[in-house]
Image 1 (cartoon, rainbow, N blue to C red):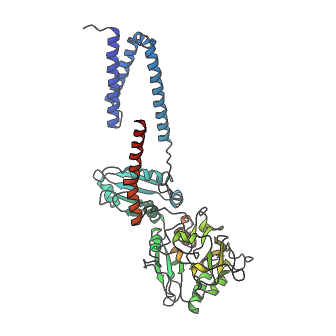
Image 2: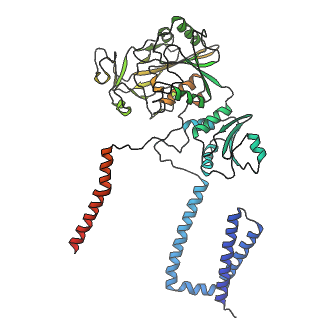
Image 3: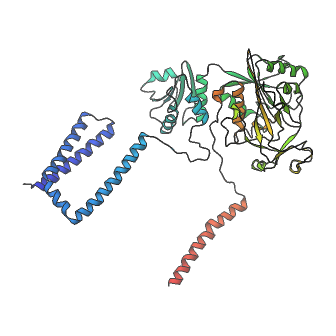
Length: 510
């Protein structure tokens, strides 16, 4: 059989394209460009080039036709569109950028994570042990490792490298283990660990000293083991995730503050302290002690000497917020809202946020001309707030009295520090303890306020931040009547309107 130039060119071109495709597919499957694939691609390119040279005349005649020119324009346009898409994808691959459109920014690393990982001074390795990588975990780790050169991540198949699995203590597929030096932290197997768990584990393997937060008991304070509405069990779990040890102390039985206490917390006492207890606390804070005092309205903890020593005035009042924010939390006006956080390291990242305090009293700087304690009022209510003496007439019936009330903005918290030769003492007084209780500690920035306060008191300023978010429950609960109405709307009314409209239009056009 004798071929002319055009037939030979078509054969060579078809063979060249087939070999190029085959070589590319072989390279894609193997993941590397081996010698055989190189030969196939090179031969394919040569055959395609030969086809162009041999059939050049036929190509010119083909493109001289009007139909071919129109087809060429379409082809060129298509190739241009494909080229633009390829370039956009290439640029997107080289310069990775994600957009988190969720309200809580659930898929964006929190300020706390960025601060902690970004300030790492020790090498931390995160290892995922499984037969195959986890795409979601890989994406999450890409975000983490981009924050610091000290953080490394790798996937290890424990069957291929059992010695590494044994070194890290991996026992099950899916284990994620963090290590820094001789310290290791094992996360739960299976799935993708939460940002909160990963960041907490990084803190644990990199901190040299574990600090203890001591909660005073014996005066009706909030309990760390109480998981009810007035308890602090959620707060206790949050402190432990930040690598703090928590314990309770009794000032009488221990004759003072235990020496291992880094921070002392007095959380909403309902009974007064004995004079000797107040003296022990005063002595502790007069040195290099750190204390957080949360005192609710309509109670007298009998800690006046401490407040006076720290230039703090705790008001004998209740703060009322007329802005109506209490309705957001199913309560009345006795839940003041705070959006002004002053100039304090505790709330340095709180701009545009809010905290709220169920039943609070004012806490202010007593003498603002006295600056040796560096006091800061860092929790200010709205201008629509005011004080009342008490709530005996009922929360929903209180009103502003120009003779006895004080108009907002009102201060609910003071932070102060005093430097000495032995170190630095720090005290924070807040006129409410319920903001950190179980129902409220996870809402808005209430939890961040408490944890940041502990961080500042413990001189762990690197931990002060906005913590990982949790997803808001957006489920809609319908009453039986609403459910029935929605059923009628979906199954009868809307379909009926569509059917009636169709019949009416058909009748008009008949």
